[in-house]
Image 1 (spheres, rainbow, N blue to C red):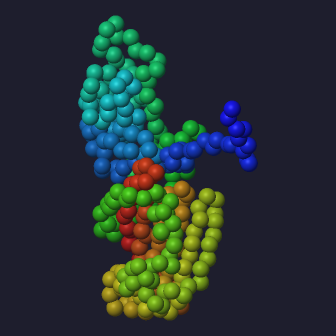
Image 2: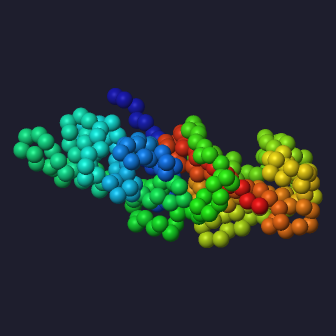
Image 3: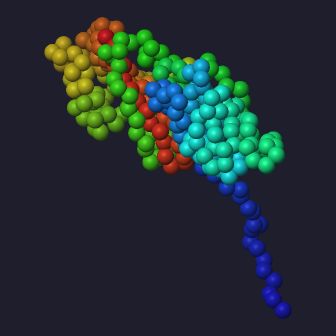
Length: 293
């Protein structure tokens, strides 16, 4: 006879949540730079762990649906873009419109099962970005972060677009960008120096936007700002703030003015940082800068 087993504590089974399920979905994310989506091209992106195919409709507006045929899961981005805003699957020729609806089955009696329809995503082109909403609630364009400086600044004051695919969770990138105290060491001589270590730090929340300010008074001007103002601001008041549009879009303002003068009398730039989760372990990181003053 087997001996009885007494458990010192009850056995519980905890349902593990996949990392991809922890993403904040009811938010606008940057899917692409606008010029990364030319007319007539199907573009694949993995966003929040999901495959997405983006393209421009015949009127030029962007569209996005799941990049996975409902029949045998072939990537639609490897298919053809047909007249009428339709994508033809490269495997068996099923066709889907911009709403994700399967509109043609060329096989057998041509019946289209209701289960063949795919999910589509709201997308908007604004501030030279293609924005995508992957949540369940209704998408509100008013919640897109304000990057209007890209529309109003002279072209000569705007840098080229930048992109990195970073093998890290997006929250680690956001954490780094919000931590302005590292600039005096990691970016010594460029974005900070020993004089910018001491600062009058302030944190403010307005609505859903959190802004961290780190001004430094009467210090040697870091190299980046000296390049923007040769000979004029070798020493001055440094103005450094970063605004976080949760969960993953940020704007850094970095400038200098002469000691005791208002920021508006100086010069600087806005550094735009837009992070879109690709997977739980990788992120799309897009960036650009706009000079002011």
